Length: 193
Image 1 (spheres, one colour):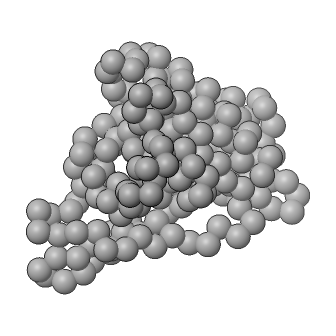
Image 2 (cartoon, one colour; image 1 turned 135 degrees about the vertical axis):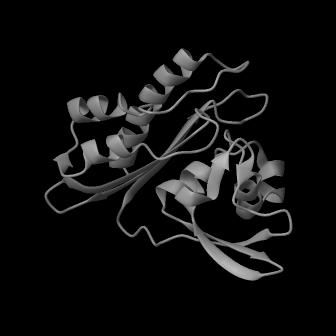
């Protein structure tokens, strides 16, 4: 999932200068890395005058450009589990001028030998004031054989209990619709890997 995400970030110059830790620390709600680390259940190491601490990614992002990092702390490591045979994908809709996600969806699916989804983890960015995991959507996929009807029904839950933002790139309603479309596409793409 990390290489899939990296190829979508801005342009080559930005990709060669930026860091995963720096992007995560910035906590931009339209950044790509926050969605990926959330789908991977990553842990983030923070270091400051009081020593180091590890924070789970779902507790790290607090809001628009806000995280649990204190002013005298920095991100020093990001720990992600090995995905093994999990199926992954990262897709986003973004204006060419900035490359920031209007909607970005990171998907990690664990499939058993019968073709049933035994675990689903999805990170969404660009939609709200911070990256998030749509728990209801993940629950709807888990324990099911993922056909198009189940994928579409689950994708419709992508913005449940989320207040989509509005800006020059789109209204809240537009973002909600785009999120549903990109969640379905990302799941289908992951299943093909």
